[in-house]
Length: 246
Image (cartoon, rainbow, N blue to C red):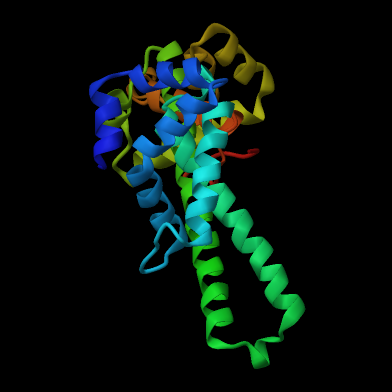
């Protein structure tokens, strides 16, 4: 973890508040940029995949402009400023490489591309790959946090799920049967989400699964239902064969 991010953690919210105060003061923004040049340089190096970058490179100039853009666009709901700034810098670097690639394609075919053009094309491809992976990782984290908050409404924690997660094939099949039954029966599913409880008596009657066994997997069943009926594309990949529907 770089020392600038660590500094921001040690002084929670201090930098964020500073940003909000100086957004309309160009002199203060310039001072902040000078102070955070090492952070900007470290960020742009990670974004470009070049072995070496100096302050004379176009990417560095783009990163400085992107950092200033982040300062002016920052709001409290954006979270940690440095994370927000990193994202803006990455996006602007990607935009730059996209533009450069269009220029390369208009000037040359792949057959007569020189060494420098080939290097730029490879950098673009690597940067796009990095950006896509980073976007997926960020979205997955947001999804998990959202899922955690939803579980809390049902008084369920991740540690609860670890303990009740079915480990035997027979138990997993039983869970699938219960979930399939609830998803196929919209009234029962609606009851579950409205009352925040499973219709255990009905499930027992229709599936012939003993109430005691239903109680053991209750929290796990609820968690899977939340994923299947909510906006959780990444988590849903892990349970897409459970039941029917989403």
